[in-house]
Image (tube, rainbow, N blue to C red; front, side, top):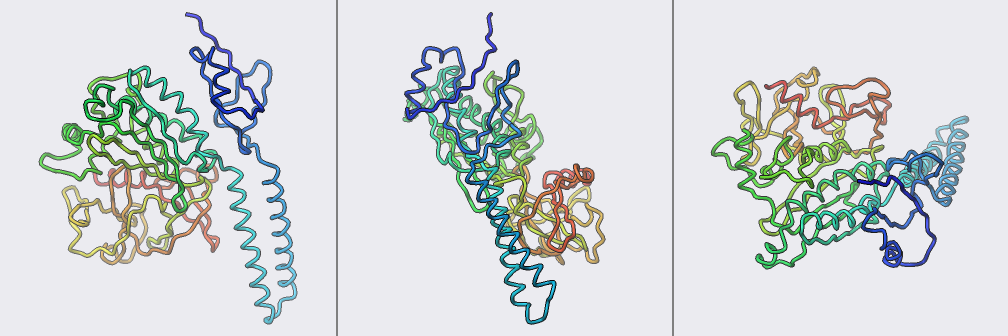
Length: 448
């Protein structure tokens, strides 16, 4: 079999529509992968050279519009002026100058905040860069399975940090493959069920608060609750007689090696499970959830931070130590009563919240922090979600929500168990950013 390893990257200046341009390549479309997209100001600019392959998706360069650079330069100029004014006031400071000094520092703060926002904007790319591969992919997968499927995209202009967009491409691809292979029914089954012959795969993106929500959905048969529950009982994930709520049952498909497929296919049964998708999302400080209705389809909802450089977190205290908990993982916080606490076999503890027992993790014990009173009722319990499972973290005090700049521990120090990174607080002191998945694993290891 002959193979061609030739690739071309063409920049075309034209006012023609995408359909007209694609028609010009119709004679080679069967034997080639053709991607047509409109460039944006943030596109990585490839530099073709002889005897070299094309640059990878994760390029180390950014193409930045001149206007954005000009605005950054203007802001830096304003910041320098404000800093100079503050220095002048401080040089000959008198008590009567306090009001003027406060005004000057307010200006410095305003320019610094605006500079941060504009710098983050330089790294932003539309999620459409990750979505652009899917029209062709869905056509190929539909042809391979003999099914009919159409793609509906919404919110492709929603912007995310460039590195987040690039690292979400593979998880989204796996979810789309699963939707075609396991979600969408055959044409005959859809017609018999009174559905349109062609299934619909939805890709949606939108801003929500300080994060971005991505949704991958299909209008197929939905998840088989009883089949998942039976498989979970076989694997010991659910004890006999227990009947968990739907959200917990559906989240079990993220367990390593978990599959209800009767046959392995080349499309989605390629040794990459849903647990890999879950880990990929969590590595971006994100969270993933599932909703499903029988006969109506499945929706995977992914919540991601806008950038990996800055984190929206909850500052909390355990003993004399302060930590930052990623806000995206927090569900609620409560002041537990003693009658809500239970001890279980093996020395572990649970807290009963609205009739559901949740593992109780005392951060002071887990992290080896001295604490005067280790009774949970004397503190607070922060309910967090990890891989579809909830657990309660016992802390002493909630100090408030704030944005923090993430610093890599491995680059600047060494890996610390249970920490995803570190930050410097307003008083100049460092604080660890807790890794919920690692904390949950540490808790399981201590109790096992």
